[in-house]
Image 1 (tube, rainbow, N blue to C red):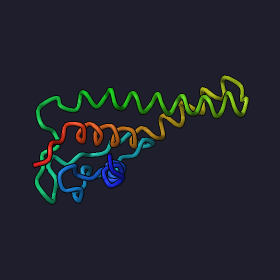
Image 2: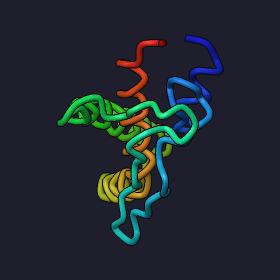
Image 3: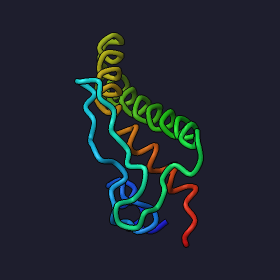
Image 4: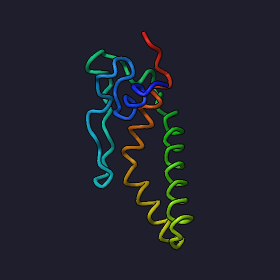
Length: 119
C-alpha cells in the first residue's frame, strides 16, 4: 500500500479519484451527531454504497479500531503510568466516545477502499 492511498484514507477521500470527499459533514459526538456520508463522489460520481447493507461490514473495522485504541490507552495509562483502575476505565471510555465520529468515518472509508476496484 502506498503512502498516497493511506493519506487518502485518513482524509476520507474517494477511492476512485482521491479528490472528492466521502463525507459532507464532520459530525459531533458531544451533540450526538454522526457524520453525513455523500451517496456519490462529487468529482467522479463513484457510488460509495455498492449495495444495500454494504456498510454492515464496516462495523468489524470500527470494532478493530476501537479495540486497538482501548488496548493502547490501557497500556499507556495502567501499565506505564500506573493509574488506578477506575481512572483508566473512565479515561478509556471518554477517549472512545470522543473519537467515535473519527472511528465511524475511518471504518467506512477503509471498508470502501477494501472493495474498490480501479476502473
